[in-house]
Length: 258
Length: 303
Image (tube, rainbow over all chains, first blue to last red; front, side, top):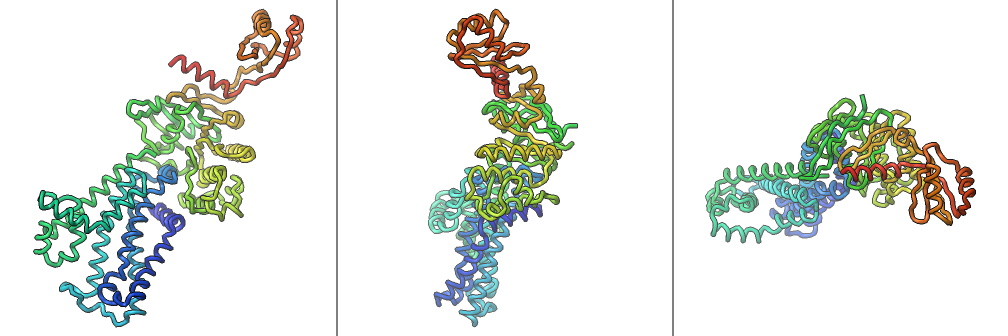
């Protein structure tokens, strides 16, 4: 597995130029906080200089590329005709995707810290910023945690689509809709829930619930009113969906003719 | 014990029998040509050997270890280039070799492999592969297949896209590695090339092995044939019948041969005696292509 991971990192830096994407992610919050004074307050800094948008977007693109390029370049054959079996190769891809997300978050966080140092040195993370349950660090921690969970879900879907259609374009489009189409999806979800209450267990509703957990999570009553689910039900169903999606993606990858 | 052994390997895609009880061996240091028409099952066989595809029944053993869809341990000492070179466009040739060399503790020497496959270290070692021509990509594909110091190399159409000089170089590379004990299983439509380098030949058609033997055995019994164009081919056919020559007319030409062989001067003498005017005369050595076509024709008639 170590060899596989070394090779995956070699490819993601040499072929996909991950270092450039990390640089962009690092520079983005510095640019935003540096250029727009309004972002030097809690909304900007606690949202990591609005870099979560970049992390989401690049995360989807990297996931789609990591999964689809082996098919499009034909490199899937040498990849699978070595001493490693398909499960090992699949796991190495997931570990790579997760580590790329961590690196992107880290770059965004470091960029925000550099920007704070230069443009908002008096900003105090130990203060409470509208969240009764914690200070600025807790808000950042929750934002990153929620986004990471969402990205795991979207990454699973992207892997599934790539294995089904071997196209990075379709996978990226799906990921973008899942991340940026939230207002439309939420309206659709509210309408559907009114018609068919059992749809609250559907993957779309669960995904949207997780997206709103930061806003509603600290107040379980409001969460239950909005989604008809407790926090525990929401999280456990979400994890179950993630497991199902990744299992399905692996099953298709295993059956894939190369 | 053979280095690679296939025993009664069968594979079905739905109702289509892609491999039907396929059995053959590859001995250490041998170059084996796997030949057959398009869709005969060559690539399917190679994919089964390289663990890319499951098979329904039979056994594949490489280096005394089983090879299955789930068990790839034996593949550590097998290199392959199947159908087309698999290249990452933003990586250089040297990057590719470094990437695939991570698989093994004892990779081949990069410089040596690049020189032997004519991947110029000064240029292709620095240029990204997206700028390579098809021939360069093909050579890189062969270099990648060799980087792990394999005991067996599977090559599917390795001469594709190569110019005559490169074909010559690759041929010499394969032969020199075979002398060092590396085995090759090569599929190619360039039958002249295979005839020059292969020690053994395996013919596959409609998923079945039609013949598996050594190249000398396969070509044994060949007698030179003489192709003649005359002013009176009917008279020539009559004369051939009288002299117990095998004769076949095709177009305006007659091809003759005899079990004991034929000498051009003697044939010209006989034709002169019956006043048949010769317009053109050539000798033709039997070759792999003719044999293959005959065998496939027979197999088609049986099937």
